[in-house]
Image (cartoon, rainbow over all chains, first blue to last red; front, side, top):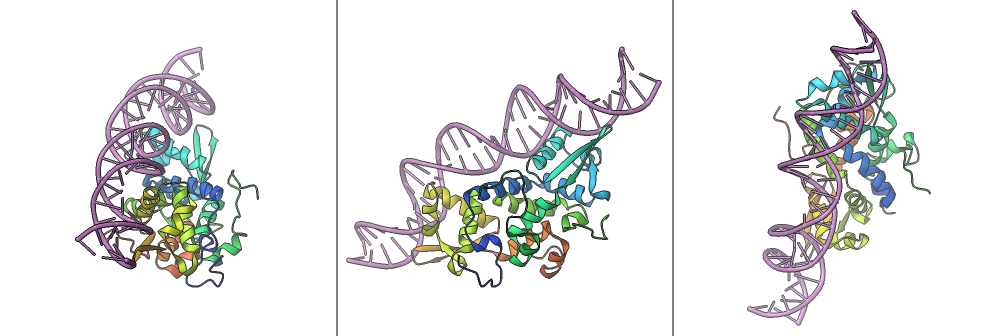
Length: 130
Length: 130
DNA sequence: CCCTTGCATCGACGGCTGTCAATATCGAAG
DNA sequence: CTTCGATATTGACAGCCGTCGATGCAAGGG
């Protein structure tokens, strides 16, 4: 309600105060990113050939037990940031691009918001009823 | 090391696996965003006239005690996402635009990375020594 | 059918986090 | 200097989170 002129930086965050509901949705996703292990997992999967990686590719990169890695992957899944698919014995993870784009758009300058959609592009599972 | 061709989505995250150090820095910032109250505080400050707001403008918007709000503001400050300045009796908070832009660039499509700098633009207080 | 391999779930435990009431600090006004 | 209003700090406490070892479960291979 204040910076419609869009000066140096006007992310959607700066257009108007966040709704309580929307803040809750975003916070759940950001919280999932708030761990170095999970960030590296996300990055390893995103940068892997074909945009997907199986758990056995990821686990050896960390000094953590296999259950711990599995737990972190579950957190990323439940935050809507990654999805997985079982193929034979292996489970392959890949990122959900729209989720990352949405988070990026919320933080970034407003020009980025437009191509993505009207400020709230992606349905991540919990939307505010209008 | 894989998607140099840059297809549908190639954030810096997808260019190559995150360094352990860099993942730690980013995680600290994302963790600060991983709380609905802090997200709303950030948004309220960013959307306030002049890009800054005093604590007395923020506190009444929440059903939380004043120390709790002060705590959340401190978390945002220590994450490098906000800065504050005392003017008389009041303390005014404003966002650190570069920090948000950096986070946005990490998540978003690669074109956004360029104008900001070579992938690691902002000094937020804790850099990796080279 | 059993065994092996890859991954998920469970239960437990220490440490961190969000919250509050109480108190301290800082600046302005008398 | 005293007082008062605005913020910050402290200490305490419940609940969540990251981690592990042990176990369960699914899918192939003998």
